[in-house]
Structures are given as C-alpha cells and as structure tokens.
Length: 335
Ligand SMILES: Nc1ncnc2c1ncn2[C@@H]1O[C@H](COP(=O)(O)OP(=O)(O)O)[C@@H](O)[C@H]1O
Ligand SMILES: [Mg+2]
Image 1 (tube, rainbow, N blue to C red):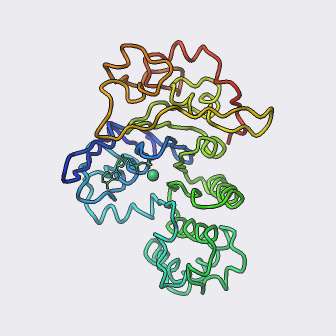
Image 2: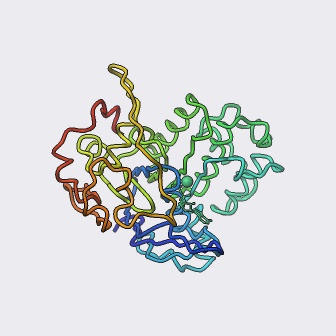
C-alpha cells in the first residue's frame, strides 16, 4: 500500500460568477521515503492538489475523489482526524515563510508550541528540542536564535525555521511547495540540499513542488508533470530526461539551461497556459503543441503506458519517444 494515494481528484472553485474546474482527475501515489517532484507552469494545479488532499481549500472549493494516507480516507475526514494528520503525518511548507510564521512571537516559542501540540512535550523539553531542530536545519547559534522574531532573520533563515517547524511533528512526508522561489540562487541551493539530506537521513518522503524542472530533477527520484489541472506525464527522473514522451515535457526540457557544454539558445514554450475557464475542447496543450494533429483538437488523451513506471497523456507519444530528446538537454544529476 502506498503511503499516500490520490485517485481521480477533481477540484472546482465556485467564484460566484462561475464554477471553474482547477483539477480534472489527478491520480498520484507516493511511496514511503520516496521523493516526488511535481512540476509545471504556474496555475497548473500543483498547490491545489495538496491543499485539497489536506482539506485546506476553504468553502468555495468542491473536492471530489479519493485521498488516502495508508488506506485511511482524508477527503471527508472530520476536523479532528485531519488535525492529527496535518503536521504530524503530513507537513507542508509554503513559498513565503512570512505568511506562515507569526511576526509577533519568538521563533523558539512558535517551534516549542508545535512540539507541545504534535509530540506532547512539556515546555522545557520542547525548548531543548526546538534548539536541536534549529541546529538540524543549519541555523548557527541556535540557542540565541530561539529568542529572535521572524523579522530579525533573513528570508533563507526563515525558510529554515519553517522547515524546522515542519519537522517538529516528525512527519512521514514533507510537502515543500515552491520552497525556494523567493530566495536568491545560493540560498536556494542550500535549502534544497537541506531538504534532500533530511529525506536521506530520516526516511521521510518528500514532495517537492516547483515550476522549475531543473530543481525537481536534481532533488527527486520521480517526477509528475502537470498541465492545466492534469498530470500529463510521470516517470523516474532518468526516464523523463532520456525519453520524454509528452510534448509539454519536451518543451520544459528545451527551456532548461545547461550546466555544461556549449551555450545554446533556450527555447521557451510558445504561447501561454490557458485560463481554466477557457480550455480548448481537445488536449489542453494542443494550441501550443508543435506535434498536434486533428484528433488532438477533439478529445483529451488519457494517460497511457510508455514503459514500466512511465506514462504520458498524449496520442502522439509513440512517434515522439523514439525520437531523440530535445537537443541540448542532458541529465545533470539524479538523486
Ligand atoms: N481559491 C481559489 N479560487 C479560485 N481559483 C483558484 C483558487 N486557488 C487556485 N485557483 C485556480 O486553480 C488553478 C490551479 O492553481 P494552483 O494549484 O495554485 O497552481 P500552481 O500551484 O500550479 O501554480 C489556477 O487556475 C488558479 O487560478
Ligand atoms: Mg502553487
């Protein structure tokens, strides 16, 4: 049994003016200790997938489907059950740490509170454990830092504190939603290293959400590519880079800068992501696709097996897979 299994997850938002479908049936499984990257351009449904799974979407969202944690249904679970899962079994960190840290409380107080809540510690052992956690996420002078307020720390340090908060419940899985987008490149690399080492050491599963295929490729074992509220391709990192089957994946690969080799022109994907209330009648990617045919304009392809553990939702994938990977793309590192 997978650690988390998502089946046919559909999310509609009632905006008052109209009902907009943000997710069109997501199927996703996460194994214990696995690192899974979720990638796609902004607006394709990466965050909504996990917010829906954790019951965090609010009253305007209508969520259908099935989400299970080790067989236990999460959709429709009552508030108390979900409270026990969030933080304790499944922790989520967000792009902007300032939105999750309370500006008027010391970092130590917030961490200790999480430890009292999730692990039932008393105040004294919570404070000691908070210091250990700050240490673990690479914050120097942890003992003094516990007394700081969030505004006294840099963005990168605050993101480390958020990770420490997420670790407080010793979760089975950490969902990191664009955890480094707001940070500059050096700090970004350090935070990603930290996330990777936490997974390596602790046996915790990691879901890394990013619009950047390079980021997920370097930090995950498996990747799910999303487009317009659907998973269009999933594979191990190595398979995805060696045999990208969906034209959207190939587009993301071609837009990826290379670390080595001759400088080449990056090829952005033409056009932009359609709004969820204005999707084309057939394949959502068809208007931007270089390989589209007539049939692509009439029906949305369902995921089909490319190879073991590799599937893609494209009627043209057979022709594309035998093709070479887009010129210039090369796998930099596989976790
Ligand atoms: N609360 C909301 N109300 C209405 N639409 C929403 C809401 N949250 C997200 N959406 C829409 O759902 C789609 C998916 O959003 P999201 O999951 O945030 O994208 P991503 O994380 O991939 O950038 C987008 O079209 C977004 O506008
Ligand atoms: Mg998002």
